Length: 390
Ligand code: PMP
Image (tube, rainbow, N blue to C red):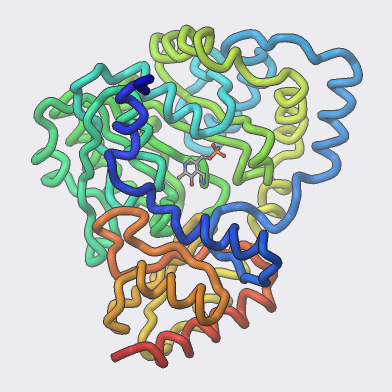
């Protein structure tokens, strides 16, 4: 029996860049102690008060099918949060609730790309991006960014790949680089997508984690609301990764298209999860600041431990829960560095190559273990880098 080509097309025939992560999981399951700095999952669990709200909602009977685009009160709360933070006028009609930011990315690309179109995305990139674009039948085209330009996208690189393209996916604050795009960068991107008539898909799931600079959302730029789709999520801002609650902020026709798709895919998000999300959003900014605080602290720990290291150069993250380390001075690739670090020190980090060509010779550390263990791991990583350098 034959499988659809679609699935092989998703990975593009290559590996998916997650070998270190799978190897780490296997070691942990075999009872080995590994300091796991691979994935972006908080070291705290979803707060008890949110779980209590979820429980109460389910017990009161909210256990039936969800209505397609999400419940009106939650859509309004998401719109209010977005408008207050970005200054972009937004109402509940612009919002569709999805099972997480990843489902929002998938639905948006499904709504905007036909088979054979080109979907652009910036390199380095969050590991799911090319597969998500390819899953629609489109061709995923990386737009390179450069370490010397702090990995900001550049108009000339977008223009060079615009023929046959219909979408550009950007991500600020950025995973894996920690870059927060400046207003000037986003204005340049806005000019480029307008000139080439592209939809702009802006992944802003880290909007509550900004350490340096200001988060600017391109939907707020003049003339951009009609061609921008913003992806958001409760995963990072409220430590609700497993609850699977995200959204898009979009022009109404795109919101309607994504809702149509939900009837063939997800049927929306569980009503008691939506109620818990509404409760969580009503806790306000102070709650989000509390969830973000450990990463702000550990970013400083990383800079204190690694600034002045011989062979490792930390790239000061402006946002998100990661720090990229430039390890090119060791003479190793990011992959070789990560593999040996795991085998010899039982410290797991992600190779830059998992996030595209532009991040080769780098590794990404997730700041997701408690402060003392995190600091210790960084000191051992710096000593390891000295030891393995040729
Ligand atoms: N976008 C980026 C940049 C991410 O890092 C992640 C998760 N790591 C997601 C989207 C998806 O998050 P979720 O589906 O949990 O909202």
